[in-house]
Length: 115
Image (spheres, rainbow, N blue to C red):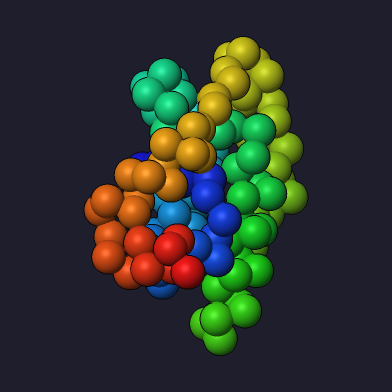
């Protein structure tokens, strides 16, 4: 699981949808009170941006003519805040490094990035 944290317009459909699913996986993990500290330590999740990132990805999904039927529930938003505060967890993702990594990994993303 990871958050790329790059402009969603620069992602191919596969990576756009993949990050969206993975954000829901992070939220589900938090809902179950399972630790995400390893993801935080490895720079794979930006904890303060889970909900806003989800919303940005959902907006791009819709703009591409795909359906989005999985909003983040208000109860989850509150639980995320409490979980992170209680554990003192703050995660940051290096979006610039991820942009380079995604361009190396994916031909379709690379084409969008280079446009």
